[in-house]
Image (tube, rainbow, N blue to C red):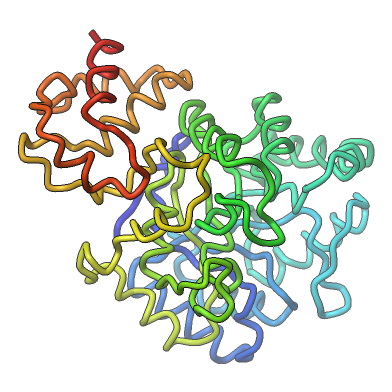
Length: 363
């Protein structure tokens, strides 16, 4: 397992966690077995926005002996009093639901308390008016909530909450379909979404990724909005390459699904290469580096993607990006202008010119 540190914290979080959109289908016994297998393989981050109430007690049993080693992402607004998932902004209903979740999970604290599924301004206004955000802040002050997060599909909403400075983590939908305006949750223009990822990293706010496979649509050429299927590994790598991303949270139905996902860590670079998306990205995405590394290997030894990422982050206001760039063994000024990367870039970035631009920027 690989881990990434939470920017505003000490937590080391597994780059693959687990979502719970499908786990209830297999029943409590299989869910408990899935969690146990995940823990054995180093997964330590679990999103608890489930489709029904089934997973909670199973998670509680599976993590009872190692609670201090796992991180729960609990949603203030997900309600399970009927046994099925429901959404609410009513504070008293939220309090009852969170109390029930804590009891089922056999814990008395929440690692990540999330303002749940806010996609429209009226919903944000409602949770603020109902005192939900103030309640989570008080719980953080009391130590019951360790970090505050937000789940949303809308860049503008995330930016408004980022302006408050209260967020440590954002759960956001990241996949090639949504980033390039295909699908129900493809909210925001290409540049707007990419700017959000860079802002999160620049301000030290982690991103946990939902819908990495676009609800499974991207995995089948018949349902993919591009008419071409991607693999799970390509989608995971795509999300992990985005600035700010700490962990990707695919949903699994059973242990077979989990074992297949864990194969990501043994997969070759070719199996994770998602550069094919350059053939169906919209025209306004051309000329923008997405850090896919398809240009590698550089004859001069430059890490072209990382150089681009540090440049973009520095321009976005990340004060550490310049230091990270300065520590690179090979910098933009070492580019020999051979054009290898220009010919290979699926997004038609003229990297030889960009290296001159980056070299001038950093001096």
